[in-house]
Image (cartoon, rainbow over all chains, first blue to last red; front, top):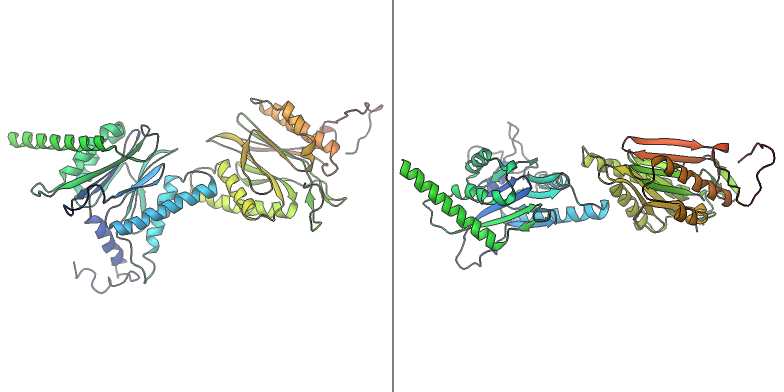
Length: 254
Length: 226
């Protein structure tokens, strides 16, 4: 790692001779090495899923939230550094609220995500600030349909059919590309998304983990909600079983 | 209320302004008299201003205040149009910007009507009286002349009118107000907004219905000067 940006990576206000800002790239690594998060757009809605390792046995389950509601029609998952991500969520709350107050309408998702990307970008312009080590993986449903956006710490914001960030994202993305998510409902896609997420786990690791799921669809009345607890539990168990089944099948074939 | 000169005696659009929605658009109408006290400083003013391509504003109250407000709203609306790129601003969002301005500056004397057409909800009329409320209604009237035509519109307005019927209704309403209100007069301007954009019309002299009321028909065909 050290050696690549030698000398040009000491401050966020320094460019390298190739035109890179290393501090911003390093900030991106915080997301890349963080918890895996997935967002997918389906026929009738969008899903967010985060796989969190159990940090300590003494912590109450479900208390380390990574998915937050921004407004009724919109929510986001926070990869990377959670405290940095909470700043983004807080800003998103304000943007949505002020837009509603000024224009009398709910904020269009594109506007919100562009503003969040600009917000993240501002931190890369001043020597006295550091970039945020997180990103905003946003799921929403407005009058243009369901959306998944990723607003990154370097200031870009793109819309996706499906996207994964964090550890194992390349594998998850490959799996997502194979799926026909646009033809599935959110209910059908829930288990499929869990499987994608769980397949990327290091199989030898015995560490406990928890999957946090949230969705927004026609079924939820276009309101961003956590997937009900029993349904979430059932989905994760079913996904686990199916993975074990498929693994043992492929073992037998081999 | 907004009948004659304001505290500073400046030009006043003591006025009749009307906006009525129909299925597929809106019709905005206004008289054209601007008075400073008893002197008519402009007898052919345009009280209907565009805020963006699909949303228009009828102004009454202080001419200076309403012109300043409409300039600000046009500025914010055009920035908004850039931010929501690819879509036209909704009538509601432009009306909200306007009422923010009215509400946060209580010293302003501006009673306005915002009306326009967007693909989301079709033709809409928003009343924005003094103080800064925002209320969506099927039809709205403001200005000193409006006091004389409330019952006219209560009676004559029906939901589901065609474009031509609505234009006729607005023209008649303003003619009635101009017949009784000294601060309203001149020509009648109409703007019809629908999915194809705006269409402006001007009615003057004989084109404005003559409201006889209890007067007898003129004996010979007169040259009437309005």
